[in-house]
Structure formats: C-alpha cells, structure tokens
Amino acid sequence: MSVPLYQAKAELFRTLGHPVRIRVLELLQDGPKPVRDLLAAIDVEASNLSQQLAVLRRAGMVTSSRDGALVMYALSTPDVADLLAAGRRILGAVLTDRDALLDELRSSGADR
Image (cartoon, rainbow, N blue to C red):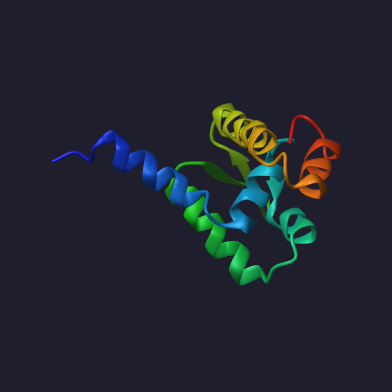
C-alpha cells in the first residue's frame, strides 16, 4: 500500500526539522562540498554531522560521491534550494514583529 501524498510531505518537512540539516542544505547551495568543509562551517561533532547527512541522504535531499579520499555532498535537485528560498520568503512575511531576526534574514542575502 502506498503512502498518501500528505504523509510523504509531512516526512519531507520532518527531515527539514533540524538546524544542522538546514545549515548543510544552505551550504550545499553553492555547489558540492567535502565533509571537511561542512564540518569547518558548522559547529558540531563529526559524528553528529555524519548522522544528519545520513538522514538527508535517506530522504533523497542530498547525494554523496567520492573524489579520491574525499566524500563530496551535493543537493540532489535544485528544487531543494528553491524550497529553502521559499522558507526565507515565508519567514520574511510572518516575522514582521521580530525585527532583529527579520534584519538578519534580509542582510544574509536574498539567495540563502
């Protein structure tokens, strides 16, 4: 029996429900990155990053490949970046009463 579409969407949004996963996806918008670069940009233990990358891989949001000794990660589709951009637009629309966060949202770049 197949999963209803609304349930599949809920699973997708649950996958996005962790700050480290969101940060990884943001970083990968600029193109594929090795794990070491992700670790340098995100203040988490290597084991935690590994767990979060595994969740994103299982959900099909990122892909991984080897480049020599490096494991490279990339967004699986440009639609992931579009989803993050939509999230920024929604936050901009609903957070008008939270000026500091709105200022940070605006100053961090329109494509993030």
